[in-house]
Image 1 (spheres, rainbow, N blue to C red):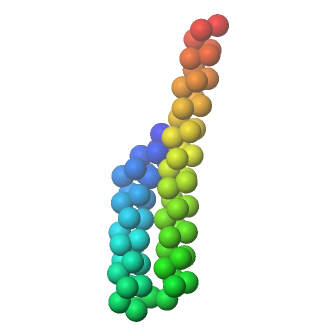
Image 2: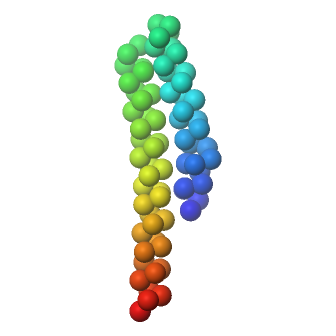
Image 3: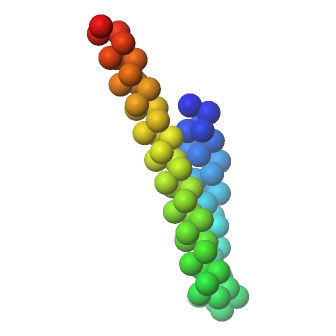
Length: 70
């Protein structure tokens, strides 16, 4: 649950700001295409880890429900 809270409250908003800055930097020529792509990759990695944390919580709930129903 700690991972989920971290990604929801801190990592995702920070990643969104990084993407916004990367887009602006690329549009204005301050950032190269490679820098822009790396920012997109980092943001995608953060989103994937967030989704993995949700999956982990869901798996825990499934396991608890299984144990309760025994």
